[in-house]
Image (cartoon, rainbow, N blue to C red; front, top):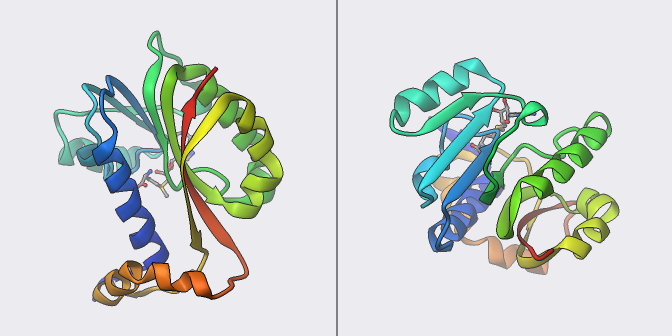
Length: 189
Ligand SMILES: C[S@@+](CC[C@H](N)C(=O)[O-])C[C@H]1O[C@@H](n2cnc3c(N)ncnc32)[C@H](O)[C@@H]1O
């Protein structure tokens, strides 16, 4: 049986919806593109996925031969283009202590690689975002979407996960120990 986490099923549904509705995206950078699962959902003319895991990159390349997947650590990434959309899903803030400095570097670099009017789509824990980054981002970005979802880590059979993910709005009436944010920001200056 295949298992999944309802919170992830919920988050990816939202990500797919957001990507589907973003128009006029020429250049898209997918940081930590993994097996390429988001490639088919974005609509850019020029997509680049980068990742530091060679095995997963091979899977992505096999799945989507027409797409450009590159082995690269984002912190060493360079490009002549600026991007209209930068995606960073399930990559940031994974290890709160060890990752703090890296996340900061990531955010700085992402800002520098975005066109004015460009979008930045990412997720991380609410607490971490609010404490560390919200104020920094307020100066340079407009929040287009902020989706808050509970950080429940239970794995369930896929079908059940899907059902629960569709009922996530009901969970708003409960209070959870921690939440995640899925954010779509637009660079304004
Ligand atoms: C949990 S996976 C998420 C993959 C994809 N974004 C998705 O949502 O399916 C995180 C990926 O980020 C990659 N990654 C982590 N740090 C990275 C970095 N500094 N530069 C590029 N990729 C990185 C990992 O190798 C891994 O494949």
